[in-house]
Image (cartoon, rainbow over all chains, first blue to last red):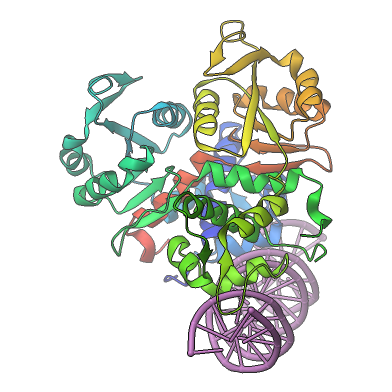
Length: 213
Length: 213
DNA sequence: TCATGTGAAGAGCTTCACAGCA
DNA sequence: TGCTGTGAAGCTCTTCACATGA
């Protein structure tokens, strides 16, 4: 099934299905229908079937999907079937929280190091993860074939950090810095701007919707 | 311009424009064209004009947009023109990081309290924000007309927390708990599931895209 | 019979192209 | 002239409806 330009939203939903499948498998559920997956996820059954159909026919008509089989397929599609290593760039409060959050909550991705420039934090450990000086980034990225950098530095530092990340060979940045990053062609940036997100949320929390502006 | 069912993406971009406008105003820039905003944001100039046109005609033909005027309009549209108070539910590492992050980075939204049930953290302060016992939520929400709850409790606690939040009168939840929340009609949930997000990112970091599954 | 897989229809959002106005 | 504001066209994603096959 060659690359038919898969919508981003499809990939994100696959990650949701993956989590549900993990729970089902943990509870020894072997078969699940798109209707049942729909109830668990809130997406429509048709959408779930369409999402999976982008990549092949993984179900059995009249029955549903085998949970373990489907999980393996999704892992392969996303690329989580191989060991996936990431790094955290910026070991401030958010960086530390994300390191812990990831370590405890995500079984598929391994944080191999955090980086900072502050001598106060370099050398410390976040659970098992060492905080290293940024100068060691390239070494670590090459050693562990790191695929993603999570960026949580202050705005002023973000330009330098992006250069370090790109120089290290990483092609994919999960950006928590509240600014637009300028990156070379071929580097994929995913923005998680929590302030923007929160501010836009206020729109839905407010009864101002029929106001005249 | 009554509610023409504004796309979510439009509201999110408004929050982006708001940040750019803040920077421009800080640098005494008084006029900006949609083309210049396009360069700052990465969105197309047509899209920016369309976004604003949902709410009215805020520009001057042949000239552009007055930065202060446009900022005020966007603040009113989103609902950030009035004092906007929020609470953090769950004062673990992520909750603390988000409290600090918000306090230092977002001038429009005020965190009035954080809540937890752990006696070890109740009573402590995150910069200026007191961590209170969950039992005080309703009191605080009513006192400060709190509009949004940021939810960062462990999964096991999320069901109870949602009940507390709903009982307190809050209509809008920004959810960082990696699970689907079941909420009554009329409660708006925005999910920020960082694990899902990260896992789906791996797809773009991997060269597996033309694999056969 | 039952649930998947899928072309076709529909909805929603973005881009285009240009009219309208300072 | 220059940039906004906007119907129309285009595109992308979702929903529908049903043929297909266990």
